[in-house]
Image (cartoon, rainbow, N blue to C red; front, side, top):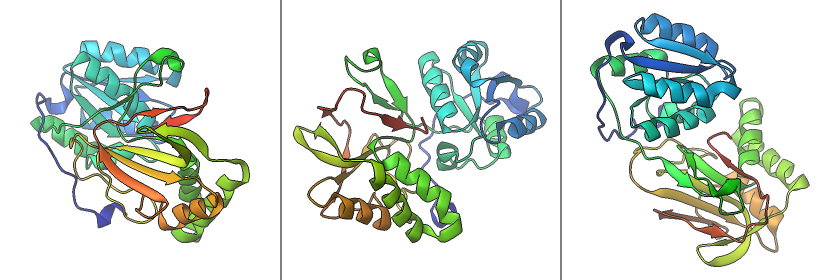
Length: 286
């Protein structure tokens, strides 16, 4: 579906020109999808860059060290790895160069980056774009109240499982049947969660909060045209007396469409409370 969408918006940012990667330190998650192969391409395209391959357990330390050494921080991995690198780059105030090296690479594709060459070309000319970094705070009882960050989306409820099942089956049986299958898979063991959203308490099948406005094509959220619009794309599928039909409709029509059981709003901030302790949440593939 990426070819069906226009190029993303490009609010210009400031970054140094780093021909051949001079002054760039790239951290590679060697267990991400295609990162190991991509690391070789990075070395070939940017012979003056320093490339460090790390195990997932060492990523945080490697990124912190790299951000303090170079004029820019590079990262090669999937969306979860890029998420961690973005928070480190923001803390250190250095530009972030993203090399797609995961399975889905949603953020890289929204930047218009499909290959190592795209990033290498941008580095040579100092071509950079500004992006928003979403922030969430689990609260005083969750994760010690520490802030978390997301580049793509934050979600509660069955949304992550719906997407995983649909993406796994869609290439084999098509998007619509995969959506139905995803709904039935989720219904077998899940129930709506209860939460207070913007002051109103109600059952929810899923809550999706996108970092920037997503343009929908097909049953899943599509590409973002502007990565720095300052908006959260909030989509909700409500629970109720007919939860199975509601979730089935969400999966078939796409959970991010507007209908009587789906709400879609734009906000700069969203407050969610009243969640049961230990309620799982997902963000950027984590």
